[in-house]
Length: 83
Length: 405
Image: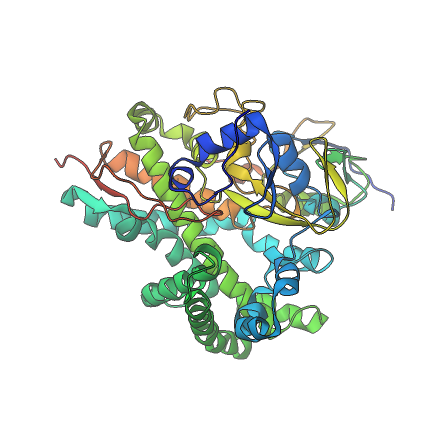
């Protein structure tokens, strides 16, 4: 599948608990390293919707997504951020 | 050479598991406990390795227990096994993965936010009632009501039922937490589980008639895929009630006690409510409510340089990992600003606590509420006692008092 996403995805390994949920939900983007924590294979290998769903299902909110070109934060969504 | 005591139920071990686990970690971090009949893991790295490896380490408790039973015992335990064998916590992939993917969207950190106003309201009402009294027994007067109210809302059961649901849930707890030699253990647990199942059945039937957007309706919707049955739905509801209430209640009590013992940290949180997220992570690390979890070995595997054989069982100590000086600086110091804090209080790997985000939110509301409303309390007993279990870190009671006015 062709993708036009230009994303930056960072996984915080102080948070990632190896639930593997992101790998189940978007296996082209996420994989496990030797420690059983998630890593990014290719941030543009799946639809935005699938990537957001994977990030959203992380029990630890370990996945953050940005627009790689503008640097705008895409996940977690801005409306979540309370003062 | 010092000998490690293998009595996990010894009074001093129950009172202070942290010192006991420090001793094991220092002398024999992958320790064969002859008395318990399995390995005890106390190092952070070993604990995480096992929790993240569901290939070598099974969670299918019922399958392994079943092998040890006589036919007579098997019949006697049938009502319990029928429900517990369907619990996601005791399942391995691929069924575990299916259930987890089905349940997880309901329990994500963002999904859980919808319950925050409700929890804030419960905490406020409880404190309105208690504040002027100057004293309470924290577990019964306060701590249990928060999680139980949310869980009943989650399954769409009326709040007035919380006393009886709590009682049945505690009866079921006998199966896990009472000493195996307690003669009525099985009877009590059967009573509890049968009551819960009979209580839930009409609620599930009603939801089948009138589906909504609630958790039970969602689970029933998945029946069509052929992956789950009504028994799975009921078993899952029993698990949510059982797994969600006592653990959270104990976290509230353990956290309160930790703050009473560190009044500077109570004041720090009171003056800086913005640190609540880190504060809760630290309370979880410092004295979580689940001391350990058990896995069964499916193939020979090496942990911490030792060969662990197929068929062995492993006690994975979350409390010990959370106090490992190899991972945490000054692990016995309570520091509410600790960051990062990669504790394993909710375990790790595929079985990481489904309700973690819910528990975190409840704890954030509870500890913001009590530190803002009350001055740092004092203990009203010199003899704190904990329930004698290998798995739970559970105070028997926590009587406290504070200055009024």
